[in-house]
Amino acid sequence: MEYRSLGNTGLMVSEIGMGCEGFGKDECRNAMRFLDVAEETGINYFDLYTSNPEVRRSVGNALQGRREKFIIQSHICSVWKNGQYERTRDLDEVKAGFEEMMSLLQTDFIDVGMIHYVDSIQDWETIVNGPVLQYVLELKRAGTIRHIGLSSHNPQVALEAVKSGYIEVLMFSVNPCYDLQPASENVEDLWKDENYQAPLINMDPQRQELYETCQRLGVGITVMKAFGGGDLLDETMSPAGKALTVNQCLHYALTRPAVATVLAGAHTVEQLRTSLAYEEASEEEKDYALAFASFPNISWKGHCMYCSHCAPCPKQIEVASVTKFLNLAKAQGELPETVREHYAALSHHAGECIQCGACETRCPFGVSIVENMKKAKEIFGY
Image (cartoon, rainbow, N blue to C red):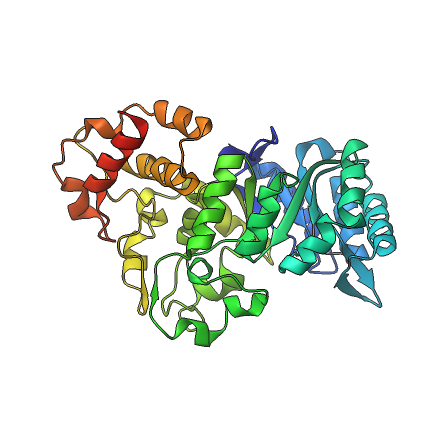
């Protein structure tokens, strides 16, 4: 298992994490099975958005004797009412739901307390200017939660939250189809068939800005919906019109700026192990570039996807890394210290480019790589 830094939290998390969809299967027996597999394979991070008390209780029981082996991302404002899940901003309900969660999980702290499901600017303003954020800050001061997170599907809202300085971890929906869609306060817009009928060209700029801003500010991204609820794995369901593999979906998410872990959705242990196979997969099995280039009605022409098809460079420049740092600097409009230092740590730099153009002949997306190297040399100085 590979581990990554979760932004500036100081936590090292497994790049393959677990969603909680499968915990409640087989009368919640799966919670124990999933945590057993996680301990065996090195998964140390999981999300618990569900407020179902039976699921929470089963997870709490499964954690006994090994709480220190797991980093828990659990949600605040997700409550159980009238026998079903609800999202709430009512402070009394929020407090009662959180206290019940802590009791059922049988723990005295949560590693990442995730403000649940914020998809509208108005909702974010209600949270940041009201009692919910103050309660979350109190929990952090008390050590009951160690870090503050927020879950969202809307890049506009997520950007506002990240820029506020309160949010240390962002749970966001990341996959190659959703990344083409503009911001919306209706999450269902992400998978509506009609939104994929017209030709879609390149990643939505606000989503690109979000990932790069998180990288710059040290906000770690934990990925949900990497498989689009399974749709991307089925040609008849995929908005792209073609199926992707589990490895391709995982690799796409893990090559986005600031992404630390993908919370792989699984309903069975076998499905979880399929995601875990990513750790042993070859580069060919992970490669998504040629599949993306063949999608009908979707084009990433001219946009670097960090796929590394440009390699090898005769001067051993890591072209994808240079381009990523170039994009971070361009998005900021200046050269942040962290970006400058990460660029400096590269073994070879854009200034070494001999403009042979070999990289451009291999790029599936027609990126002007030589021009990018020139621009990077101009910005970074070498």
